[in-house]
Picture 1: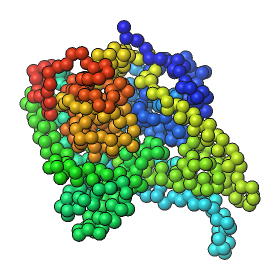
Picture 2 (picture 1 turned 90 degrees about the vertical axis):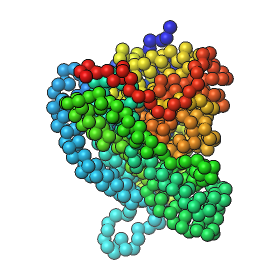
Picture 3 (picture 1 turned 45 degrees about the horizontal axis):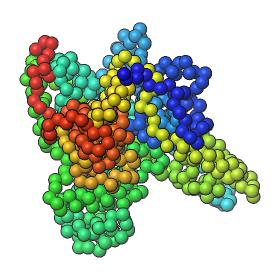
Picture 4 (picture 1 turned 180 degrees about the horizontal axis):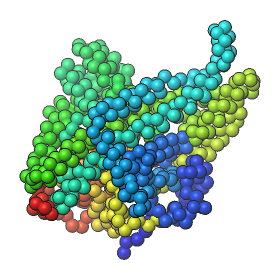
Length: 636
């Protein structure tokens, strides 16, 4: 029999060497003994989709701002009738969420407020979205102006003459506070339109389920696919650069893309090389403000700081072009499939139902691109600048001896950094020859915290905590994270599922393929992926686009129909099964898999725990036509 409950937070074993890990994080981010009765009653699920690795103390800034701001748009801005925000805690280094429902007696009063507020946005979508972009870019521009330079030996003479009256140290303090506030500002903007994108899609999704009771989730998703998203623009830039390199006959100049200087110099020395270098420079601003991670961690590598990453992708695209492959996303085929599916369902409707269907689908299609596009502006561009500034500050304080390694600031909480900064400017201001106190305090604390983080990393997080509800109905939880009633039941019986080589998850992108698994636990390992392998990972990042044209399918541990992995795979016409819970830890690189993106199943065909029953082979790239069951409606 499957278990009926997940472990309570207090029941999970603490990894050896991680005792006292709670001191890494602010009090409000960890479970409290005095609140145990309340917190143990709530169902929590691990968001390893966005935060797949253990937090260093400073890195909680991302989850604190993102989680709070997601909630404010549900609970305070849009007044969503049935959903408030999502409560959040860090346990054993990983993030857990618990959706907060609206009490039944409050729902009715929220409905007119919700309709008025959402109506305003949808009626003024283009104008407000352009305003959004202006706000976000303004925040990024201001963030770029912030500097964290070492303090001068003395106040400049011109400041004496002008009567400025300050020593410049206030700039260091103000810039730090401003950096934090600007990040917070853009995270508020982040959710202004994201929740609306989900609302529009969910409204269309729910209407389709109402009038077509048997319609697959994938058919609904297909009806809004095949769009130009800004999130795909960085990858498209690389494809254009690869195509230009082939046109100019520069293929042999990309033999060692890891050596950026040598590669670029070699290109520049070739006939037509300067033309390519000009196009390369043009692509970088803003499209190389892109990380191979997801923007939430200080160790994420950004293209514009690690040019070997885009050069490596370009070299691989050049190889594929020389082999005669089509490297472009199959947008025309996706649009044709979308149009076919839409028309098949429209033919089953008439009158008011058809008009409603068209209106809701149109709104969902308009709002849908933002669900991914915001990633470029916030997680990638904003957070790329943010982390670059944090590293600059960390290097400056390292120069004053505050810590042993240049990036050790990440082991301080953001409010501790402010204290350390004041320590620095105070000792500098009074001319203390012994310097600040911090160098005598922080190295020991950082060493202890480094050991705690390393110890926490030795254990994978539990997928969920406490007793799940009988039915999981909160729409964002289902759509984004793939936390459904069925999926939770599968997790509770994970041992039974894994024993016969069958993993169940969300049917996230259609198609059936067989191939060899490549398990990727970290973005730094993406270069290991070989042509036509099946990617298996805890989660994928939107920035992994350049490898989607190389693989056959994707399997992830977490994610729903509107997760990044699901959306990107649909736009690249790749089968995907998301939300399996344990694929990355049960499947081994080299095992053969059958990924069924239509049913949401993954069969392990050989090796440890292989499936005992193997269905007939098949590889279908598109969904089938509407069946009688899918097309059945209550009124038609």
